[in-house]
Image (tube, rainbow, N blue to C red; front, side, top):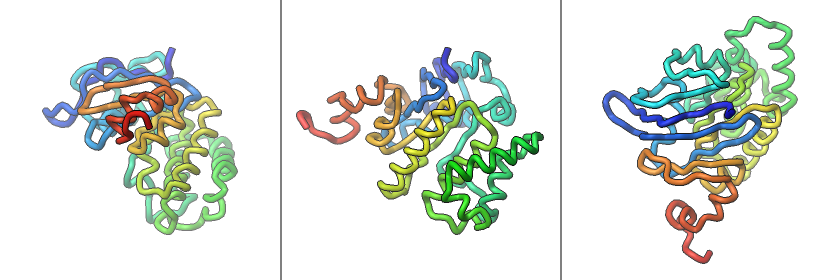
Length: 240
């Protein structure tokens, strides 16, 4: 049984449909990528799982329980963390204060303290700047902080909306290395990303969206090797 499963999902905003008939599975301890051109509905898919977009049809199953109609706060409490593309840290708060916000609903003080140290061990860049305001961090450090804050909730699933956007290639590769380490804890990662090469290269499995529908799926390696995807979505000519 998949950690997270979306079945026949149609969703959008107000009365406008953005994605239609989407079926995806996210396995524990693996990265699943959602790729596709701008405006294809990738971010809407994530938001619909959290009920931040309007669901017209379909089901969302998490840890074998249907969560389709639960309020957003309850979905988060059950173990799904979401890191949006923008406004994903509190700029006027310190690194430490941001991490504290990630544990706001937890009551286990000893566990929280232990998790702070685990985050700082995992992300030493944050440990060195724990008293610095988030607004002073680099782009890569801000993404690490956003991910670290999400991990403070001890999620089973981590939903990331374009965490590599606006980052230099070296920094983007560095973030992906950290995600590969995070998945070893058994966390299922659903990665929405514009950079198809990097996302599919890191993913065990991937889905390609276009105009609100899933048009291709397969292992990350198989999709990257598929001539149709390379030509249609990556701009690589046949035979290259």
